[in-house]
Image (tube, rainbow, N blue to C red; front, side, top):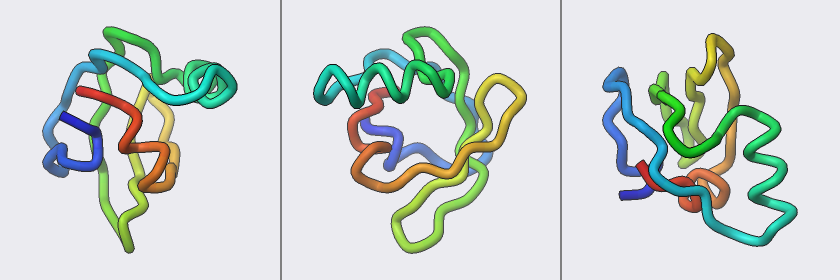
Length: 69
């Protein structure tokens, strides 16, 4: 399922990162790689704040929908 459907506070494992090559590379540089643990901290207006690799990152709904957990 896409990261946008993950419940707040529940850790999830990234299964796949989709999208164009440049989008995948950008997300991988932020730490969104296959097998990484990610936790949704909060959602506001469709945008997500997530905790990944001991960092909090805000990403838009369009990017979050390309990350499968």
